[in-house]
Image 1 (cartoon, rainbow, N blue to C red):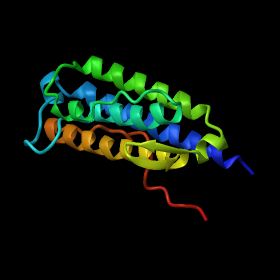
Image 2: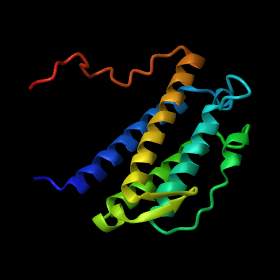
Image 3: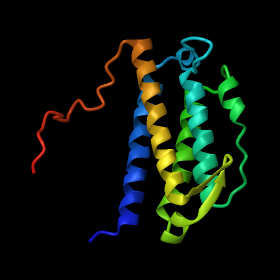
Length: 169
């Protein structure tokens, strides 16, 4: 039987990295102005969401699971109206994901079960990883939707994959 903890880590890393690839593809098709365009005053731009993903991933995964200081300034993620180019956002996101997945690759069962205080919540390492993976996926979907709305482009994430295959039982 495969080590369940190892499989959980591998799948979490796979999902985060796959979504990062999708976000980067969106960055490539958006213009510099579109990165910071907000649909309305109560919504966020793709740039805000990227900053938010970096902040959340760093606070939950990097800070909590590797006992590093929590340096997050959450309100700044949403108040920014620029200040980063597409290239700078990509570098920031890639560096955050590389650091986070590096930590995931070194997780052991003790650290998965240990309770951490994050953003006022007491969570196990497993709960933190589920939160980050789910949160990252949620906001990836927002970036994809906003990119399609702004550009009218089909991003063709699954262009070479037959998604109509039936399950084999």
